[in-house]
Every structure is written in C-alpha cells, then in structure tokens.
Image 1 (cartoon, rainbow, N blue to C red):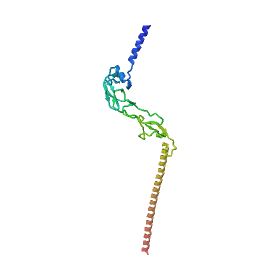
Image 2 (tube, rainbow, N blue to C red; image 1 turned 180 degrees about the horizontal axis):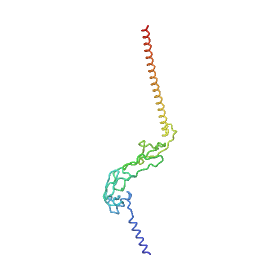
Image 3 (cartoon, rainbow, N blue to C red; image 1 turned 90 degrees about the vertical axis):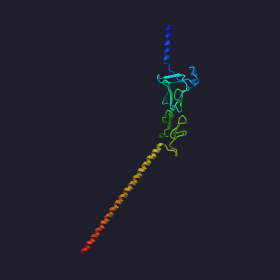
Image 4 (cartoon, one colour; image 1 turned 90 degrees about the horizontal axis):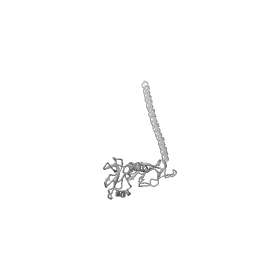
Length: 228
C-alpha cells in the first residue's frame, strides 16, 4: 500500500513540474533570482519566449529596445509591441523588466469618460462629461482632458443655478431660441423685401398707365384740332 501511495506521489510531482509555468519575478527580485543561475549583476534575463509561448530565464545580459516596444526571445532578442493595456514611454531595458513598464490608467470615476485611448508610448486621457454637467475638480493643463498618471481627473457635477455658468442643456436651449429668433428675423426681412418689391412693381405699373393715358389724351386733342 505504501509503495502505491509513493508511486502516486511521484506521479503528481512529475505532473506539477511538467505543468509549471515560469513567471518572471518583479524587478526587485531579479538579483536574487540571478544568483540561482550564477548570473552577474545585470546578466539575468527573464523574457517571453515566442516559439514555446512561455517565459524563459537566461544569463544573456542587458539589452535595449525602442519606446513603445519590449524585447522577447525568438529565440534570440527581438522587438515586440507592447500589450494594448500597457505603454513604454522610454527605451525598454531587459534589466528588471519582462514587459512594458507602465499599465494604462482607467477613466472609471463618476463623470469620467475616455477622451483618447493613448498609444504604446503614452497613457490614456480622461475627460469629464460636460453634457451631464460634470467639470474637473482641479483644472488640468488642457481644458478638454487630463492625464490620470500625472493629474487629478476627478469630476464634480456643478449646479445649474449658477449665474456665471450655464449647463449644456441651458446652452442647447439658448441656441435653439437663438436659431428660432434668427429664423423669425430672416422671415421678417424677406417679407419686407418682397413687399418692397411688390410696391416697386405696383408703382411701375401705375406710372406706365399714366404715360399711356397722357399719350391718348394728346392724340385726341390733335385729332380734334385737325378736324376743327
């Protein structure tokens, strides 16, 4: 019975070992992990290995990549793009890093929305939903958005009874009224123009009739004078 239990234990150990996935340590642990492999101070490297789709530890030493990218083994050092949830604003280094350094922020506070999704080199930017009356608690460098990794992106809903401020709904109402007033004014001007045009045409007609009447009278006087 003990022999059977021992065999089962060994099989479990073998199974666990075969399914064990190497996880790259955090930056503070790289030096300690490197000692196990007898690597130098900056020789230990832990990166994702593309052919095997798992992390791989070596003593291949320090290497760099450009901004917006990281390094992987393929099977040697090769450049790879950052994951869409992370960004790399400065050159990537294999010293203490296995993935792009920063994780992108979230615009999940009340009144927040994603203004721009950012890039592989920059964080996302957040805005306050002005259509619902939200404004930044602390004014950011840019009036339209803020950088959550550098600024306070908290939003506050402002009351609509402030005389110095107008809620977007009030602005929309004022704009609608203004457009309506402009339409009425435009219609009034056009009507006056059309009426003036009608008056002008009427005057021309009356003047033409006067000319014809005068000519007929002169013709009749001439005929009478000749017969007389």
